[in-house]
Image: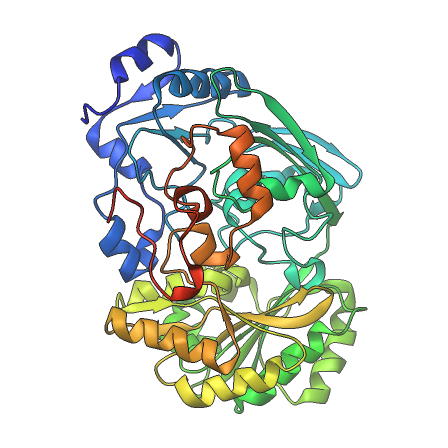
Length: 467
C-alpha cells in the first residue's frame, strides 16, 4: 500500500462506508478493458489505486468526495469497468470510487427513465420494456455496462443509426453531478449543460443520476446478409440507413474474413468469402425490409425470426458481434489483434471507405458502423488491426488521416487524443469550477494538466506520473 496519501485519516472520516485495500481487489477495480490496446497495456499495466470506496447512495458519494478533497486524495470513478481507453484507471493512485452499488431504476414515465449511475443498461431496459418503451442508445456491452459509465465514457452505439450520438441534444435529458470540493455540491444539469460532463471520463464531476429519453419498444428481428463485393455491402448498408420509414437499431458491415474467423457461434451461417451486413430491424417492417434488401442483391444468411429455436440456442445477440464486440471476439481468437476508431465524413464516406480498404484491407480489415451523424447517414469505423509494432500502428493512423478519415485514437488515454481531438473549453471551464484542486481522474484531460501541449504536433501525451 502506498504511503503517499493519508489513508488512515480517510478511513476515520468514512466510517460506515465500505473501503477495501485487498491488493487483488484493488488491482481488479483499477482496471478497465485498456488491454484492447497493446500501447495502453504497456503504458498502464502498473497503474493501481491505493483504496477502493464503494458508494451505495449519493450521500455516500458526497461524504467520500468531501473527505478526499480535504485530504488532497485523487478520486477516479468507476462503473462496470467496460471502457476501452483507460478512462477508469487511476493514474495517480488514490481512491477508485466504485458506483456499482448505486444501481436502482428510480422512475419510468412516458418518454423518460431516471436511474442511478451504477444501474446496468440491460436492467434499465427491462424496467422500461415493461411499459412498452426502451432505451434509444446502448453500447455493445449492454448486458454489463453501467449507464453512468456510458454517459461519461461512451459516444453512441446500438441505436445511433436512428438517434445519432449521446452528445446530440435530446439524447441525455438530465444529470445529477457531485462536485469535488471540501463542501461538495449536487448540480442538476439539463439541456446544453449536460455537455459539460458527458464523455468527460469523470474528470470534472461525479455523475450520480441520469435521465434519458425513451423510444417505443420494438420487436427487433436480427438479420445477416452476405455480399461477394465489399463495395456493394457498404452501398446497401448506407442506403438502408437512409430508409427513414424502416425502423432499425443496427446496420454494420464487417469485411471477410473477419466474420468467418471470429464470429464462432454464427459460423454455420457465414460462407467463406462473404462480406456481411448485420441488421436489427423492426419486426413490423420485415416484409418491407426484405423487399428493399432484394433490390440490392444481398444473400440471405440469417434471420432470427426464421431460424428454429434449437439453432438459435447459444447464439449471442447480434449487437454482440458489432461495435467493439467485434474487436473482443477477434481478440479471443487472436491476441495480436487490436483496432482503430475512425469516422468517414459525409458525403464521400463510401468512396473513402473503398480507397482505404483497397490500400490497407489485408492488414486492417474493415468494420463499419452506420450512424446518423449531424443528421446525415455516414459511418464510423472500428477496423481490426493485425498489430506488429507501435511504429507501424502510428503509420496506419497517419495513412488514415492523410486519406481523409478522422481517427479517434483508442491507443491514447486522454480525452483530447482519444476522442475530442481538441480541448473542450466548456468541460475545462466546468472542471475549474467543480474540481478546483484537480483531484478527479487526474491525467486524462490535457487541457488541465498541460494547457500548452500542442495537440497538432503528433506527440503522445504522458501524464507526469507515467512519463
